[in-house]
Image (cartoon, rainbow, N blue to C red):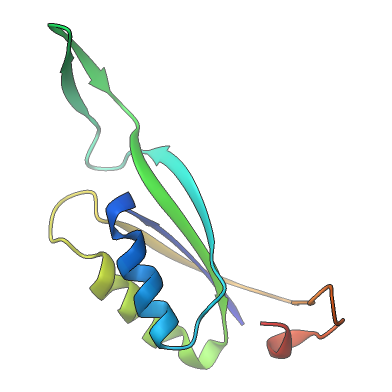
Length: 112
């Protein structure tokens, strides 16, 4: 089992959710986050004053998947989140040692 963590642009969330849902992944955790990478923020004008916005709004999506569908899930996230512009985000993949569904006590992939 693998944990996929994707940091994407907020307006791409629905596209990614739909793409994952179509392939049978229904459980997501979504967190509103702020950050920057190569994009390094931008400047904005507010009431005539210019100020620098260092941290840009992003969305962090986390989902646990079976190892055999990992590559397909990553491809779907890339297709749905890609705009071709700087700041599209990153995907991180980590191993999951154990998963337990609290309600039923199911473990492993059955708990997903």
